[in-house]
Each structure stands twice: as C-alpha cells, then as structure tokens.
Length: 349
Ligand code: NAD
Ligand code: IPM
Ligand code: MN
Image (cartoon, rainbow, N blue to C red; front, side, top):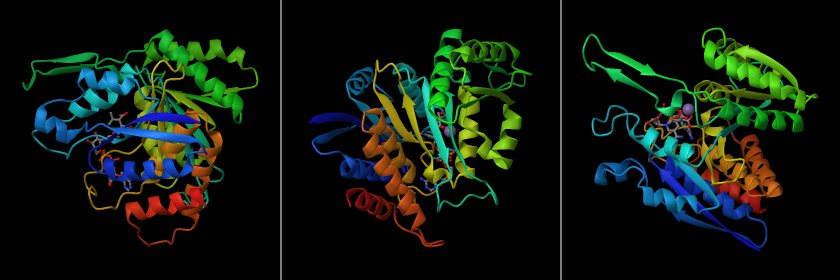
C-alpha cells in the first residue's frame, strides 16, 4: 500500500478542464492499495492579476515536497496589457523546470491507430524527443539596451554547459538502448558553432558506452523536413531546449494533433519531483467551453504513473486512450469531461 502526494497546478485557460480529466483517469488507474493525494495550487494568471504573485518561494518549497506534479497549462490571453508575455511562462513554468532540475523534457510521439494524421502515408511512427530542459536559450541570459528606441539591441544568449549536455545526452542514449537503438542529434551546428561543438563532442564521447546504438545527426531545419516526409525514421531525438520546443509541436501536429501530445519534465536523479503536463498551452481561444481534448493531459498522467513505478497502470491508461481514439466518430464532438469519463471507464473496466 502506498500513498503518493501530487501537487496539482491546473493553471489557466483549458488547463483546469484537462487537468480534472487527467486526475479522474489517474484515480481510476491507481493499482489496488495505491492512492493519490492531490493538493491544488492556484498558480497562474488569476492569482498573478489579483495579487502580483507568480510563484512565491514558500509555495515552491511546498511543491518540492510532493511525489510528483501535474500541471495543466499557464499563460494568459494574447494581448492582455496586464499580463505581458513571459511573466507566467518564465516565472512559473520555467522556474519550476529549472529549480526542480527537470533536465529531461520527455516528449513521446506515436501515431496511434485511429488518430488522424495529416500525412497521407506516415508509416509506423513511434519516436521520443528528449529535449534538454534547463539550459539553452531558455535561461534568461541576455538583455536589452536602449529599449523602445530605433537603436534598440536585444540579446538572448544560449547557455550550453558540458555538464548539462552530457547528462541529457546520456539519458537519451539509455532510452535509445531500450528502444530501437537509434539516436538522432538535432541541432544547428553549421551556424551555432560554439553550442554545436559541445553537443557534437559529447554525443561522440558518450556513443562508445552504447555500442549498439546507431547515431545520426540532422540540422534542425532538415529535421522538420524528415519529420514531415519520413517520421518513421526516428527513434530517439536528443536536442536543445528551443529546438525541442519547436519540433515537438510539429511532432504533435503530424501524429494527430496537439490535443494528444503528452510530456514529462523529468528529474532522473530524483532529487526533486518530476512534473507532467500536456505539450499544449492554455488555448485561450477554446477555454471554458469544454472543447479541449484532455487526451494529452491524460497521457501525461500515464507518464506520471510510469515515473512513480507503475508501468502496468501507465500502459492501461495508454491502452484506454488508444481505444477511445479508435472509437471516435469522425466529425462528432464530445465535451472534455465526456472524453475523460470514457477513458476512465475503459481503464476501470
Ligand atoms: P496553445 O497550445 O495553447 O494553442 C495552440 C492551438 O491549439 C490553439 O488553436 C488551441 O485551441 C489548440 N489546442 C491546444 N490544446 C488543445 C487541446 N487540448 N484540444 C484541442 N485544441 C487544443 O498555444 P498558444 O496559443 O501558442 O499559447 C497560448 C498560451 O499558452 C500562451 O500564453 C503560451 O505562452 C502558453 N503556453 C503554455 C504552455 C504550458 O503551460 N506548458 C505550453 C504552450 C503555450
Ligand atoms: C512548452 C511551452 C513552454 C516552452 C513555454 C510556455 C515556456 O511552449 O511547454 O512547450 O517553451 O517550453
Ligand atoms: Mn511549446
């Protein structure tokens, strides 16, 4: 018997709608004797607009004490003058990823039977992007001069440490070893030569530890071609934080839509809780209407189950989501909660 504490951050827009369904399915999937104890944290746009608080240190300290974190999405309506872009994204989401050392941002992509890929002939698509989660251009290392003038200068400096690159590359190799043994480094070494050098060197240095893994390299622009024309060639992709952000939205699009794409922000060393969230954002255009597909959040819950040591329960959630997809009627629309209920019922039954 075990009880696992979950810090739940529903967040903004469709975040609360999809998180409710993910929790519903988690409860249905919990193995006998296992209980989840959710604590909700009202972080996000509403709290910020009411109090000016984004992520108080005391709240971060509380969140840190949980076994895992489930997050919906954060981010306000575009153009809201009271909520400039970046406040919540940087101050809440990225701060959690950085402070909790989520250096593996794991984003699996599969074309499930029944999912509607926009590609005519995609073949068997099943790959995982291991996106670096704590460095790159995301660190906030940069600045601006003469802001608002014609002479404005802005820099965003990408940080790539040998330590940070090595740990994520080693994780990606280990995942490839357990899968189809193919690793693709995606970067832009022909232009970003300083960062490119450290990524290439470390991949080459770690490779001999995994002699069965075939290593490949693609520039990120070419990677978008192959993700569209030949996605079945990929097994594990390891890449920088920003490239990983961009190619995983593309990966979601080719595998049936952003409503299906799950992710885990993993701290493999388990020095802090890992955080599970859909790849998508707060979708202000459909928020509050029960139109969002909760499948991405539910599949993120499956990644959470796997991380906490329940691979069978994780597989059951994935199977239930696949069955739900296969049973969808083209053109029919269901409310967010109906999809969650249907998947929870399949898990329970
Ligand atoms: P988005 O992912 O929120 O939306 C892009 C498009 O996909 C929209 O048309 C939306 O309706 C649709 N969509 C997204 N999730 C869906 C779902 N579950 N079911 C059906 N349709 C879905 O991206 P955006 O519009 O660029 O960003 C909106 C806000 O979310 C911004 O403030 C952004 O910073 C933030 N954001 C947050 C996260 C996160 O919290 N992890 C991720 C991405 C974006
Ligand atoms: C994602 C999002 C975030 C990112 C933003 C909201 C900070 O786009 O999780 O993919 O860029 O990582
Ligand atoms: Mn993104």
